[in-house]
Image (cartoon, rainbow, N blue to C red; front, top):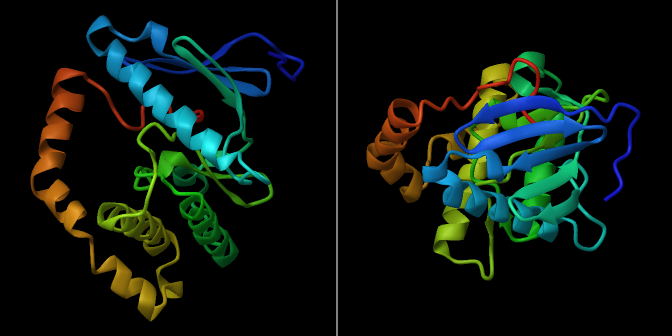
Length: 220
């Protein structure tokens, strides 16, 4: 595995119960071997989901704006680093950013991948050129066929992007975008009514995990 870059000293970006994420040169290494024993199996499962999604998005001409897979080893995933800062730090207010972000989500869906975690601003980057990029595909679905659930989750991907647009550029929301914001999918309504409470209890009370942990520097 070749690593490009002049400084090859690991820079720890995040450490939690699911392992560590470090930058080495122009790559990012997700290491599930450092996960706590009781969640190590889940950490490896999430890592494999990310690898499947990124591998699918790399087919053909690839998908600009998502990380490129460099290597998959037992318990460790290496992918390319994307220069950029998290959305919540940059606070993008350029309409072109959100137009390109919508195109990026459509390209991901066209490749039969659903991100499933676009509500987190830390998963959206703003590159030095002001363009959008997406990271953290641990919860992504790589589809074999498109069914009702996939369509619903794809709808929610779009709706979560529009929530960010509503936060930073509400005056540029179209009538159609407002309708999408007002119509969460059935899966989303069920999640908000029941599943999210269980998720927050497990992740925050039991695992002591925070979604934005490490985001002050950069969530990879």
